[in-house]
Each structure stands twice: as C-alpha cells, then as structure tokens.
Length: 244
Image (cartoon, rainbow, N blue to C red):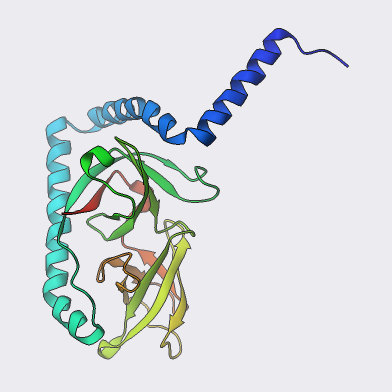
C-alpha cells in the first residue's frame, strides 16, 4: 500500500478543518464570507444600476409593499377579526435587505437565501419576509450582519393558507413547498370538487406564524397548484417585517 506524503496529509487535514468549521462554526463562517458577498453584490449592481437608481428602486418597492398591505387591511381586516376571531396583528415596519446568495444545499434540500441584514439591524428568527408581490418566506437564523430566509418554495416551511372562493367562502389548506413556478397547496378543508382556477391564495393567519391576508399566489389547477406571486427566479431584494 502506498504511503501518503506529508503534502497529502496536509490537504486532508485542511479539508477536515474546513468541514468542521462549516458544521460547528457555521455562523462564524457566514460572518467571514459576508464582506466578500457584499462586495461581489455591490460590484454586480454597479455594473447594472447606478447607486442612486438602486436606492430609488428599493424605495419604490418598499412603498409598493406598504400600499399593498394598506389596501388589503382596509378591505379585509374588520371582517377577518369579526368572523374568525383573529387577533389584531402587531404593528411593525419593513426592513429592506439585499439577497446575498441562494443555497439550496445549505441544510439538506431546503431552499434558503442569505440576506444582508442581521441581528444588529433588529432582525429576529421567525420574522416574516415579503416582496411587493407577496409572501417570500421566514427568517430561520441570524448572525450580526446576515440572516437566512427559508423561502415558501422550501418543503420544510409550512404556511397556513386559504383560497378565495366564489360568494365569499373559503377553502383552507397548507402550503407545502414547491418550485419557483408552482407551489403545492395540500390538506384542503371545505373543498367541494375542484377549486376554481385563477382564485387568489392568501395566508390565513392561523397558527400565529404568518399574519393573515398576505398574497401567496393564484390557483392554476383545481388540484391545489399555485403560481407564486413572488418571482423567485429573480429575487434581489426582500423586506423583513420587524416588530416594534
């Protein structure tokens, strides 16, 4: 049997150390790569947009989120509280965060994005993450400067949802992952035959994880396939709901 050279042992040792760092010191490793990811993103955006254009774009998207929420609350808030006994959601503010990277292999087969805002900015685990289109996901971990967000395409993230039915009725279900093109609505309650396509799908607020009334997408089949409202294939900025 051929003996390993000192150089081979050095490579094996370095690989073992790197693996240990990723497994046991993952938050530290994430903080170490944060400046590199931030610089890479800044260079990429500078080649496409000027800093002023990028800032104005994020401002417009922030306003879009706020306007969309106000319109929804005005139409549905009182009816939801009266009919279903929902607790009034805590008032909060949205914090814009750049998407640094996307890593579907970070935790098994989970669909995770890393964003450039962390605990120093007030982000906490469990915070709801949206875009102007609708629900994007939930913060699952933080470091000082970054957060990991499980997207609603992640099969490990379950979202209580409902389908708006003709006549004002609802069919409740659970969103259970999917792809950037098609989400899966499962465990449907109150369903009578196939669901009407093009119906809106929104968060129900049940379970207390996600506030009620956030847009998820539109039914594209009567079996519970949903076209997401968020463009997950081109996710650049998200907005994290930080409670006061």
